[in-house]
Amino acid sequence: LNYGEKAYPMAKYLYLHGKNSYIPADENDADAEKVHRTLHSLAESDFRKKAIPYYEAFVEYFNDNFYSDRIILDSLGRKGRWGDNNADFVGGGTFDQRYEVISTILQYQVVHLYLLAEIEDAVEDCIKQDVTDNDGNLHSWDEVAALVIGSLEGAGQGGSKDFRDGQFIWSLANKMSVDFGSAEDGFALVNSEIEDLLYAGKGMIQSYDCADFTKVVTRLRNIMLIPLIQSVIKYATKMEGLSYESNADAVAKGEAFTLCALPIIYHYDKDGAKVIEMNMLSPLTRSRFNPKLKGTQMTYVEEGPQAVADAFWKTMRALELPSRFVGSLDGADPSKLGEIAGSASNMKLSLATFSTSVAISVLGSYLFFG
Image (tube, rainbow, N blue to C red; front, top):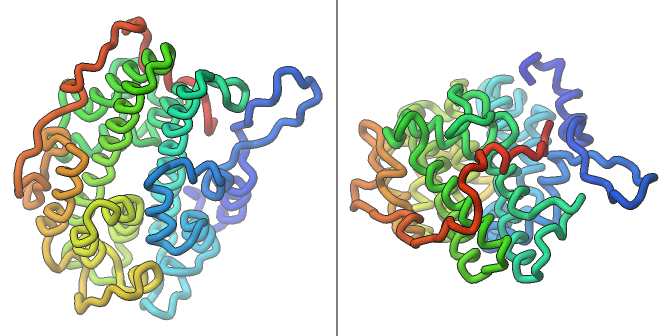
């Protein structure tokens, strides 16, 4: 997509057919044909249904089983909300806006929901006592770590020092921690917790301690929402007062991040979700996904970034997301309504079942997307 409009056909081809990532073949079948793993297949896979309860939340919100695929193909086809011939908005969307929408939806909606499904699949494998019941006999928890971290972070503690290297939720957490003051030793506090949970989970699934493993899974699923919450709040500060017809990249990125988090927020706090929706989404986007929601706003974030931040608080409290992991921005503090303490470390998870000398990059070393 960085090559401009001429790259759309190739970008669409790679989305639909893939290139660098193969689904591991049956090692006992020498004639097995290599099959590409594609982002399109992740966006449409029935495997996503394992991401309970969030798959149902996304389908209910978008009223479409293939919500991500629809947004991506519309944007690649220069149609829909970000189309350049959109009669509902003067000028429609720009190339840069479509780039931001497509990349954000791929990274933090398509891949992230598939990650949540892999997490639940790991629980099933623990219960079956078969952690390699996966394509290519891959370890269930390695698949999870690969989708949390990716293959670009390197072997250093905390991942790459250049936060542009990573493409998944791990890197997003590091990027947001700089803005929100939620970093320690140069990396996101939430990533330190994620690392502990990945190590703890590995030991528990190896020993088939499924009761404690389920607790780890629940905590991991919850705290991975933090970088998405931070991203929506960050773009609320950038979008405040902008026209719905704005060609600013921040408008597209902010709407896309909102669509990655909003169905989850609706699951826990419908009133808070409506505040986010009214402030962060254009009338055209709202009319497509939630036509019953009416409003008189003339610009983005009319209630101010703090109203958007406040709208996340009930969800943060329900999921016990520590305030210090989320942090704050000037004029947008999601913990203003009350501090939330605690961390996964308080669960007294045992890490003694495996060596902590193994670098976290090893967990993420399996290359999913080349």
